[in-house]
Length: 440
Image (cartoon, rainbow, N blue to C red):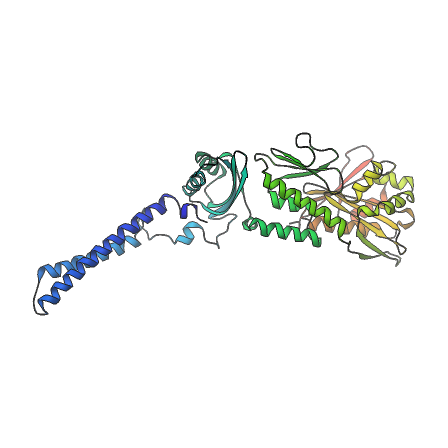
């Protein structure tokens, strides 16, 4: 949608110019018709100077109007093609001659306020490509995707919207995919959650924009559990604990809170109802095992698995006697709100290895535990590779791991998965990392 139907003052001038040209053409037609009628009445051999003058005047007026329509209004070159001037669909929206920005502003609920914002953006040569209005108690929050010349910066946009009556104005560069309408984008994200292609954090970011997502034990003090406070949303995490969403510079609206809560509830329902896909895993000595995503219903299996691991193996994995937090901690380990866990099961269904991918922003931590009687058979190497693949598919930037310095087996496993030793954060500990350059 073009702001104010065009580029502000230029569109107004164009309409005035079009009216003036039309009136001249009508006058020229009247002069020409009058002259021709006089010539016909006088006969072909007569020379009527007044009649010929009317015809000539009409022709000159038509020629002048035609010249005016093709001559530029501000220079000595033909007018630019309107599609190029306003940014055609083929223009690079992320850079080049024009750029796509997302603006957000609170406005009062008064007639003409949105038109004032549109006029302000039109004054910068902007075209509004999408607009979403969020009703709030004291007015509305306008979420605008606007296409502007590349020379227009963040400060220009904020000043233009603020001058039009906008409050708490924010502006950030947008991506072309954000031009999808909200219902279509939301349905696509939901479909990704259902079939396992997506994850909750990415769905929330795509729904709410540039936000920080983290999982913690206790609810946020300001928002409380299942509540919203200014730039914070706090929801019950699917794997236990609280899921906190934060955004600086722009408060969440009731509509955004409802969308976030629905997305989290859908993710929790998917975990409860969908049967995990099983994949085959063959050890170095030919034993055939299966790998699948863990669920809360696996609590008893994983609890038994830990009892069959030696205290030394558990300490190397958790830096303690076992998963912190007892049963509640084990459940959160199985179904973290951000990330996931994989179980490796033997022929009789017992768990022989557990792999965890715990996410924090665009970074994930990889951790493994293989039962003592199944170690040195290639299970850890294959499990680590699958976890790194999951991180890459989720578009993460980095995978990390923390190990004991005396755990040489896991060091070999991490090196095989492409992680490199990057530091010693604490005495007796090693830190590993791998950059996922192919991540989206």
